[in-house]
Amino acid sequence: MKTITIAILTAAMTLSGCGVSSSMSDGNQNSSRQEKKAAEFEKIATLLESGNFQFTLRSATPTGGKTIQMTSEYTLEAIEGIYQAYLPYFGRAYSASYGGDGGIEFKGAPENLTLTRNEKKNIVAVSFEMKTDDDQYKVSLEIGSSGYGTLTVSSQKRQSISYYGQVGELRI
Figure 1 (cartoon, rainbow, N blue to C red):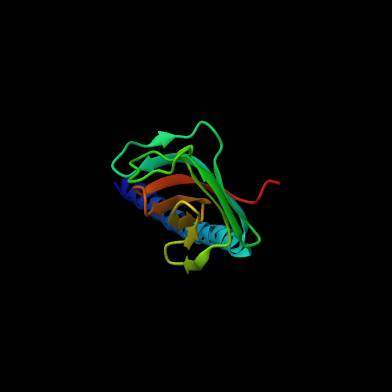
Figure 2 (figure 1 turned 135 degrees about the vertical axis):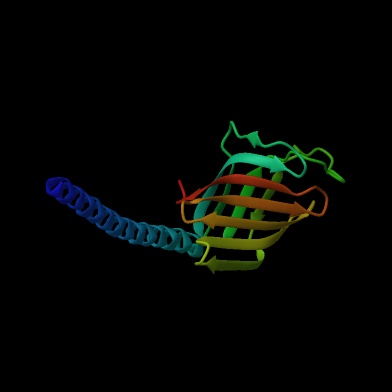
């Protein structure tokens, strides 16, 4: 009887010791994950603040429509303060220009450019307005610490559309 009690106590102490070391290693893993996420967030924020980046589309979601996967490469590029995009458009146009190909295309210096960091949510947001001869666009880009994010384009002549993709350094 005495040996059974000693065996049970030894087993209980061993198991409780494993639990303590496991929870301590979980705490270290959580802090290292948080540090890694903070470093990734800082890298993405610095890239967007530099004004030299490329957002490559993976999919498009028109207002009230289904998600469409991209089979060709479409990008939004920022090169030293000049934003350039040629994006496909899927959705309803209230008025379309004659002879156009239907996409969203602009190039130039943006108006009302703002860059916002949300360190609690690990999101960097860039928003601006762009005027062309045919239309005026409001553009919003939100990127997480992973480098993936959403680009939303609103227009006066079309329904809004959102694109999902990844930001990275310019490929020249």
